[in-house]
Image (cartoon, rainbow, N blue to C red; front, top):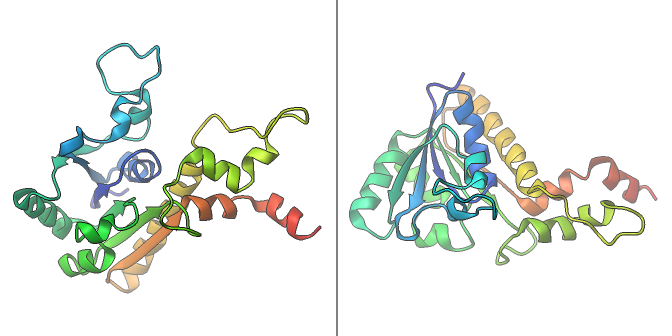
Length: 215
């Protein structure tokens, strides 16, 4: 379905990679750019105690199927040239930079649009309410109300055992990208798509949110 699409993944951990894997599963060429200086995505080594072999972790494997992997140092001029060439040939960039990092590496939407004037730039943040905060799934689950609704009446607020905030955000970012692809059929220009884990969590409260608002 998406065999003509080329996606550059400048994301790590879960939500961004999960978004990119959706397109890889449907035939897109996804190139995951990993940090050469840190031996790649940090989740490569997030192993359970029973993962005793030397392969990459189950966590990393769950959202990185079907991708090509390139290891680059954004501060190295030669690697920067490689990255620029990748962006020039891409249809979509998926990123999850911490506050200030996109500016530091000259990889904001505005700068990438100057390299490729038809790029879809999809960025995933942590907190909409405070962009300086680093987002963790358990914190987002707590602050958006999910933990207070989970568990038993006699138990304390309970975390869901999966990275549900990342999964919700990945779905919403994916939907934004799909809308941008549809819009490009009418207007072949660059588009900026973004969401945060916090916004995705709140938006996904659905009937629980309306229950609260209508009390």
